[in-house]
Length: 310
Image 1 (cartoon, rainbow, N blue to C red):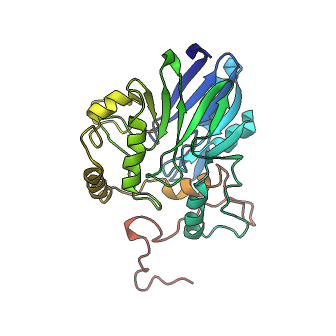
Image 2 (cartoon, rainbow, N blue to C red):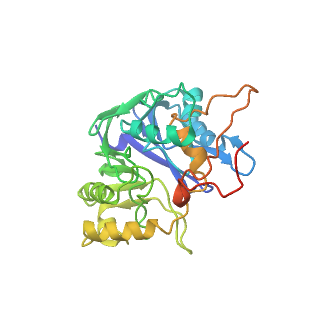
Image 3 (cartoon, helix red, strand yellow):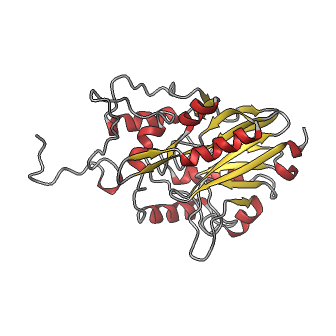
């Protein structure tokens, strides 16, 4: 295998600040899509596919077959377009096996229909830690990197473009001037996140790290590619010299100040279903629930007096 056959293309969605990727074996003409975005306008509930269509059109124009739709985790900030792309272009939807833990938690939060079983069967394939899948002839290793959620996976290509390693890190790391992911979602754990990040930062220094999001400070354009060396030198949360205890203290303090993501409620309901919408109701419409006092700092709080149900 030569490194020249691996191609990576990024697609930035400004509305959710998410980066989706195409990873292709250009010789075998096979491709994977990582963390595809389905567009939701939250004020109106309008769904559209412009972001996913950009990716589909890109693959179609090059004649590349879609082999895998890989999710790094069940995102809380965008809806997955995996099922839409699968319907349009084929391929198999895969996520880490611990998605079952996430499904069990949120089945109760959203009071899913009785037919919803939290066994991961909604996905075509559940990845084991260290499992190797192939995109064409490119071997991709699924690295279990829990902490942000229990199910997070990073996808590691030993030889990417230029012959250097490449890792799609999901929501573990951000660009060095942004730092690291939050760890206060159900099943999140700051100490686990630190260990997952150190696992990534033990890779060779020239390994390229592809972020799933960027939240750039004022004056910087969005960016999504860093290296292990850059992160070890300059990441504001976890550069070399920051120990686990210090990181955990920082992460807990910072997470306490963060608002709940704007799209967490619709996103999770769809993403634990592998990108499928909830089943239609008797009137033929699909409804996404807004459970009251179910997530965030107000989770579990009683309803104010007088706000009784019918």
